[in-house]
Image (cartoon, helix red, strand yellow):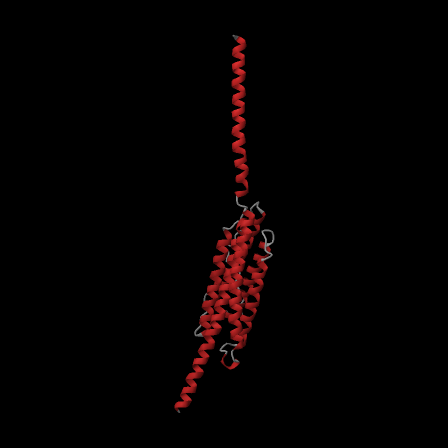
Length: 261
């Protein structure tokens, strides 16, 4: 009797083991089959970056075509000063370089490039602020300035560097606001002053977004900066075209007046 009971237990154990093996045989291949279907995040991001760059390339190509049309206009009806034309020409060249740089921008080198670009923007604003303010010295940051107060440095290398950079540029923004506080202008100069204030506010907004960004946001930050630059150059091209049309209209009115005389 004991022998029969032992045989029964042994048989039951083998049956359970076989069932377990069958279960593993049916489930493990399913997991293996599912593995290749998991998305490759790195490849997905690369594809997205390539699509973003392609879209920006298309926009810059359109800018270059529109600017070429401006160059083909007779100088007598160009409607823009030589200084404005040279400024737009430089912007067209630089915006092409900015998009081309995206092809080699990585998570490792993006911050150096972004920092350099924002510094260049700040330096351009500084030159215009000094000119509009009558070449007066830019005021030093106010003693009660939040940007001027030292904070505890972060242990994270990116965060610490980002915070210091944002703080430095915000101090410059406050100084520009102080320098332009009592500047008055009319006519074309007023338009230029309004544009300068808008550029300062845009930089301040960019600093606000950068202040909350992490290192993993590098592509979104970089893409937004280059797209903003493309927007600005597009507006400059439109301004050239508007000026040209205005001059042409004035010339036509003058011809009509002479004809009536």
